[in-house]
Length: 102
Image 1: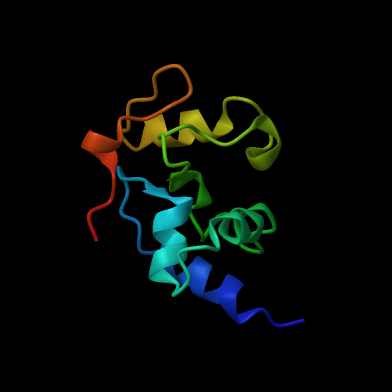
Image 2: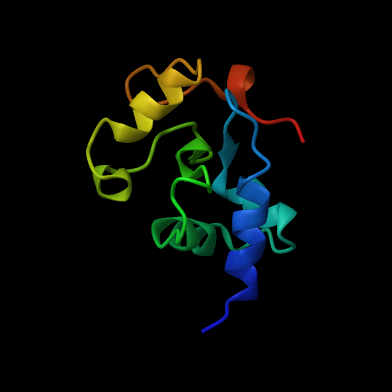
């Protein structure tokens, strides 16, 4: 089944540069509906192309990383972000430093 909203999510997430993060709400707004941040999370959870679509670069509005289920283990998202130069402290990133300014 085709899901045009999910396709928009994946297109936007692919634009987040290495070393930056975006929030679920930010992605929802860029996809045309600021109230669909939970659906953004679901789209990323069922990401059909995890190597191509960098869903590890999406965090919540406080900069907190996703729960352990989303990336195959508790530290996977943090390790991916750190490998891109993003500091992760206590499971969160500093949005004032790393938020994508699109």
